[in-house]
Length: 186
Image 1 (cartoon, one colour):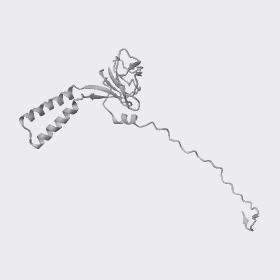
Image 2 (cartoon, rainbow, N blue to C red):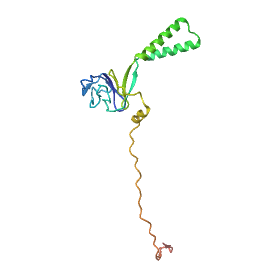
Image 3 (cartoon, rainbow, N blue to C red):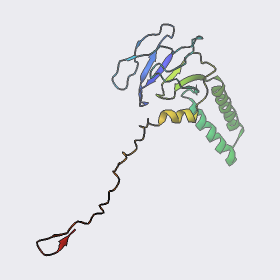
Image 4 (cartoon, one colour):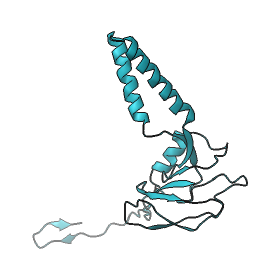
């Protein structure tokens, strides 16, 4: 199994190759981008009874989704298909250009049909390739993704309530004092 590891902030750490049957707790990173050479993996309850990955071994998240792993040539094929569509729309489609467009279409369909599936963690975006994928893993879901992209909010604190004693009114009349300047002060 090949794993492209990311950290909690979704920054790419590197790639590792592991055998799920051995369940190594430490693995050496190939192509480390941040100087890290080893990573610790958490295999506890990560695999189900059929040997399929049930949760992320990098961050422990239970939410994984499946996606197609397209090869790098896919971008070139898409650009060629767009160029062929423009040439056809402008009316410059000659038999050799039509033949090239058919080849691009066949290549595009082959990539779509034969590309492999991979699992991706919703929280850290680590990608798992080259392993069986269980049927209970679904495609990307916005509601689950929103749960993992929003920062954890602290519970709102209500402002402290000010408790005051009931106002007591003095009903007795007190004599007024005289100030130094002749005015009376209450």
